[in-house]
Image 1 (tube, rainbow over the protein chains, first blue to last red):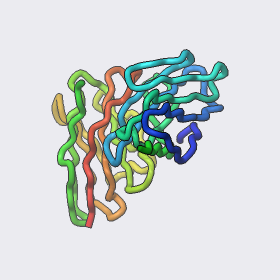
Image 2: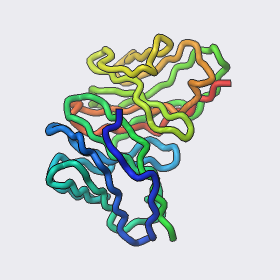
Image 3: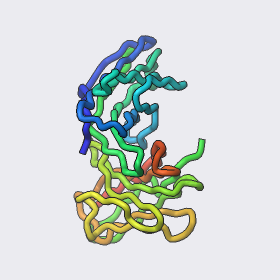
Image 4: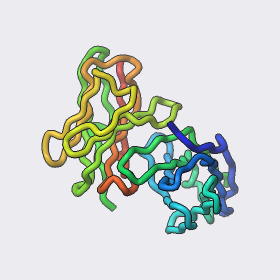
Length: 110
Length: 113
């Protein structure tokens, strides 16, 4: 089952940074934090993942607290196309599958 | 970027009929998955498949469901006798080593009438 807690919905103004929080207080030492998003009913799209260090790629930044019990996904300049449901998932890199929670529905407002 | 391909994009069937959903995972991937999403609900894990056998399955994946990798490229999900509650979007996913991110297909919308 999902081991993360996310707010059900958030709004963000277009062009501003979107900061999506996630709590994973029971995360284990070998579990990574993954972020995916789903636009309408399309297949989930990978965004970023990390273990304990902050990560950045062309899509987003991931900030993981020092105790690893929470993280924040940052979309630096949100666009209308970033409107989607964002899922925070913890997963050990041992071949087991992802459990999706209910995610955060992000609406980017013009 | 390589893609997971699913066919058909939409399938309509009568209750009690058998359906086969097809997926072509990314060519060098070894781990394969099926998920489903009932309208308005979360994405649910069904089954994972590695080395020609099921490695993990959920409670949803009962005797009515089966998976197969009939050749070197396709990965199929069969529902033997469909029920109304099987209506959902079905997603196939794959990954290379099991230690990497999952790549998802665009899904097959199954409608059982």
